[in-house]
Length: 205
Image (cartoon, rainbow, N blue to C red; front, side, top):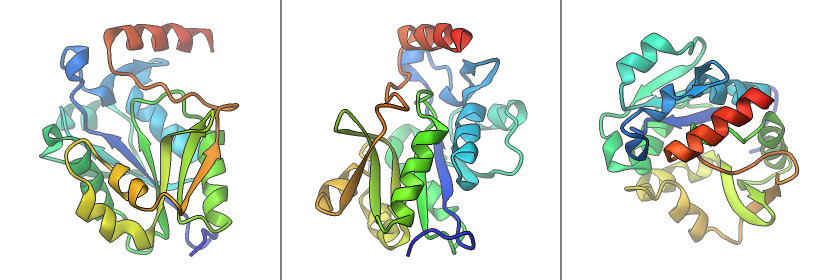
């Protein structure tokens, strides 16, 4: 089922991580352009054309709720966030509206993903892609788009830190790679050095 104005694709923002390699600073609350990083991810998803974002919280969930402006988002809490990304993906899928034709999965710690990249993935889905992923110089990255007919399998296979990787591997022949290297960057934010680099870059934008 392709995306239409009557069946918009929601974003699923995975923002539960505790930032272990960042000294235990929850990734959702890392500063980016003067606001928590999770707000940036929500803004990117909306500007790219996604419907109501579902934000999965975990580490410091109450602090995130109190600090970040997440009006208009569905908030899903993952009490098992320490087990890895798989549990957050399952929690987010369970919180989606039942009529969602697909979901665009966006990691909170990839600030180089742009609204234009989100739009390209949504366009791929509208053209018939049931599975799509952003690619950077031909290499698969994030975000990832998953059509509704794959939700059950995703729920069954998302475990530990695997997330959607098992699903994408099992359906490699169906996966549409959408080149985004000209409009986005795939770098994630895992270490203090990453944070310093992205903070400096944000001041130059």
